[in-house]
Image (cartoon, rainbow, N blue to C red; front, top):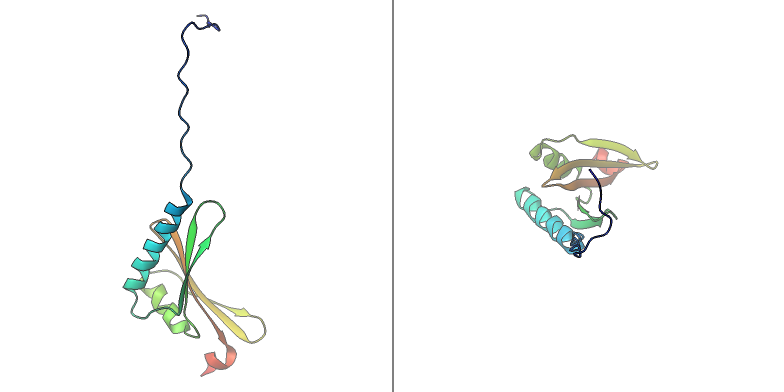
Length: 117
């Protein structure tokens, strides 16, 4: 078998695969945020999208001083709840789940006084 390095007919160039549109990733994250919030019994204080700097987005649901609502989120999505000290007098409660390929985190930051009450 031999290779002919001189071609008489031009070779059609291969069309490059277009890069994914960052707006599409953002819109998917918005759709996941809407779906998740619609399933929760209580609305989060804020909903934010986070750019992961590699073409995707994540969703963060913040429940102001309400770790109990983070626990409801964890129970609803059957995921682990974590509570870790934050600084000297605060507690960071969070739960993570992946919904339709988008990472969703529910979280709350409370002071020790609020946790004791």
